[in-house]
Figure 1 (cartoon, rainbow, N blue to C red):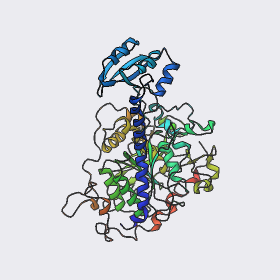
Figure 2 (figure 1 turned 90 degrees about the horizontal axis):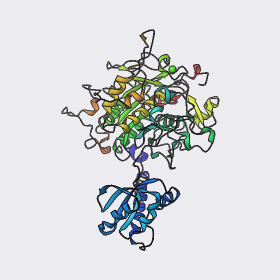
Figure 3 (figure 1 turned 30 degrees about the vertical axis):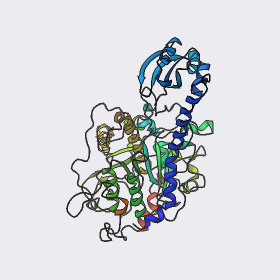
Amino acid sequence: MTTLSTTTSPIGRSTRRFQALLPLLLVLALLGAFVRPAAAAPDESRVLPQLQREAAEQPNSSFRVIVTRLDNNPAADRAAGAGGGKKLKDLPHNAFVAEMPGRAIEALGRNPAVKYVAPDARMNKTGIVDSSKLGTLYPQVVKATGLWSGTNPVTGSGIGVAVVDTGITAKGDFTFPTGGSRIVAKVLFNANLEKTGDGHGHGTHVAGIVAGNSWAQSDLTLRGKYIGIAPEANLINVRVSDETGMSYLSDVVTAIDWVVANRVTYNIRVMNLSLVSSVAESAKTSILAAAVERAWFNGIFVVVAAGNAGPDTLYYPPANDPFVVTVGAADSMGTVAQGDDMIAPWSSYGVTQDGYSKPDVVAPGRYIVSPLASSGSTLGTQFPERIVDGKYVWLSGTSMAAPVVAGVAALAFQAHPEWTNDQVKWLLLNTSQQLGIGGILLPGQGAGEVDATAVVRYSSTPGFANQGLPINQNLVTTDGSTSYSSASWSTASWSTASWSTASWSTASWSTASWSTASWSTASWSSADETDVR
Ligand SMILES: [Ca+2]
């Protein structure tokens, strides 16, 4: 597609590649420093400085260390034992693991048989996120907070979530505990724009619901108050819309193509699309439905907002696609318990033109407080009365409910990297809490309101959703075979040849379909959202 060249310039690509390489280069540099002590003078301590410091400070504590022998000299093992250490096991590369008292580590590092002593560091990618200062309800409503700590904490760490939206403005909510941004990649798919930052505010708000974490805020009163569902997940900022929230459908389709192509590089297991077309089209023919299905078939868990148009309105891609997880909005009614929760009156639901009932599930989507991109952003100027604590803003909409589910999926994939997107969808459909009054189920909830703990801690083998669903016609070649693998459907094949104007009318996907109307006050039903919770 010709617009691809303008949205992913060669300069942008090489910059991204450099950014991707940077952590690797840093790791190599550290490894270089690690090896160097072997050449040090015999009387010099060969202990990793951090370990040396901690051992000196805590002489009576036990440290689990990796000792590397010089020339595989067994005297190193004896030296560890003489210092009061206990050998646990041998390792490849002439090394062994031992538990050593802190007071003996310095001397062990000076033993001529010892090449180096380093801590047997915990390979615990998962931090623990403290929820004791949380000021919002929605992570508690979906039972995410209890997963962030305990023996096997689950925070979404290491899982990439692509947020296809208005961009993400980096701030204290998206940093690692050790510093550095969790927005691991930024790309732009809108020819009118040059920045990946968020001048609108929608994308930043959505990203905060997925993976915000205010513990890194400089203002102490904000720390820990605003935390998203998967507070240590990595974010991939895929900007498709400008400051007014507008983008072309072609930008979104191209963006999804990029996400599929880069899913391995950034471990993208989840993609969030809090956007919906205002033009109805069957999921069998829609090119946007084709794009999300292709992402699904490539293993990405695709979450989309149902829309904010109320009953009998599920005719709009990508929400009407049978493969993806379509999310409606629940109202927590100001309490953590799900038993009293309602469906937001504007949350879209119904049967699609292809006969599928949607949404699949609901999640909290009313009065959701999440980071404000900036006070000068479109949202900041549009809703100054909704700004909370200066740096946050509350919004309502299925746009806010979808990223709750994206966050839950990130938690699930961290805890169970072996689960497929079909399995996590099955879990959502089979573990959600059904909402009702007096035994009568509320309409528009699909399988119910999501329960992160029930999904993540599921102890059996999940089933598979989506069995037997027909796939989008654009993904079927003329001989009837499917063509959704990255090999057969690369970026190059997204040409006008395979996507003829016959199957994709520019008239039906005009600028109007992606106007601010779909992300405006109207679609968030702000009229009835008068109180802040
Ligand atoms: Ca409630």
